Length: 381
Image 1 (cartoon, rainbow, N blue to C red):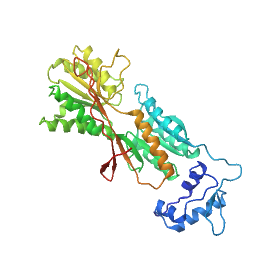
Image 2: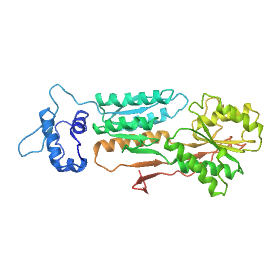
Image 3: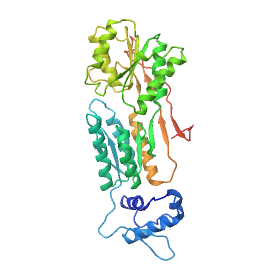
Image 4: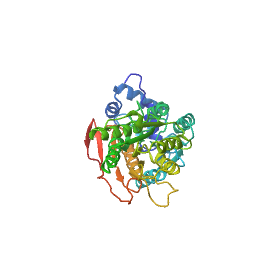
């Protein structure tokens, strides 16, 4: 790896307690294999660490980890970097899952809220959060990035400085992090198959203009389910909403159009529950009945607080388990930095409620869990 300097990574590991004071530093050979560099590169970094007071060197012995006078080890801390969007209630279960796992392993968790209205402001807040962690290092980061393209370079720099990252919900392009999420394409396929099973055939997909992998995968699952039944994919039944779809009037206009053409659409698969909730309300205001005229399926299982009882048929994401697995994966990465990258997909389930059938019925699909390594699936515990 030409030009690579392992010094900042090794220094960060000492400062954050990954290499505790009084322990032996890993051998030059082991470090050279981990970083993919010549042993001379490691030797130069070790010399610099000794000169800076981070190592005690003795002839014929491996270096012992020390801290410069007056410097203490940073707390065993990991950071959760995620936007706490007011209408998207995944934050609390993810935080709960991360915090429980971290506490069980003797780490504390700090939370950095990056939510902002608008992609530019969101990208700025994510960049500021990750840059601040270079000045105030933590042992590792669980990151749910909203603006993946803009945030990826900042994440790479943090990783190059020695801080491991686990991405959740969506991978960072060009950034080799561990990942925890769900199989969005398969889950979307299950949602549309449910609509087909209820007898619907004129199914619309309402998505948005975002290019996150999850958005693309859910659209692919919608198309796959239709193809499996021999139903052609008609582009006029795939509606892309703008960036302010929750607060805007696009959904109201769409509902009014559907009311003027009864029977053109008999079911809708929405890209997420936020869209689905707004859609149900707009359809009702337009004089259409849900599910009698149009059935609606969402994605996430984050029930709208305006409903008196659960109503929306949806795909349940296991948000607390996502947080727990991400924190556990991060702590394994901290303990074994050279282990292969992991891509973990947790199970989803279809929750059938009144928006697709007049009588609410709970009908969970079998949970799917898989860890993908090199394109092959294997069990993960």
